[in-house]
Length: 127
Image (cartoon, rainbow, N blue to C red):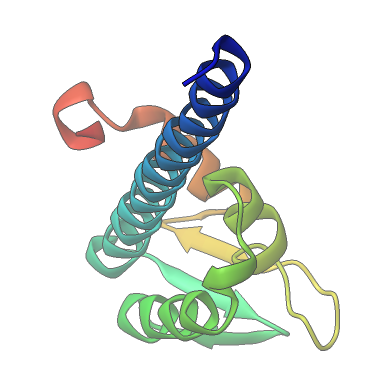
């Protein structure tokens, strides 16, 4: 085999290796996002809070189910956990109204609540 042939073979091999690496990274990234989203939904499910969507109040379990349904619908288009919070879990797709979370006497947007929960996630929970 000529040197030119060897170079072409090496270049082709490097594209194959790069493709595998990119696929592995994508799987790892999508797994991380899925893990984070499931963590956030479980936090909502376990919270002693209510969820306000389009002016109507829902239980923590109803809120978690709603977010899970939206996640199942949108997950193929979600590129980060922040995108999930911003585009899926913080507002109604139909009305554009912000979702709110009521815990005790405090009411904040679900965007703030979920972002805080994600920031509070411990390193063990991040694995």
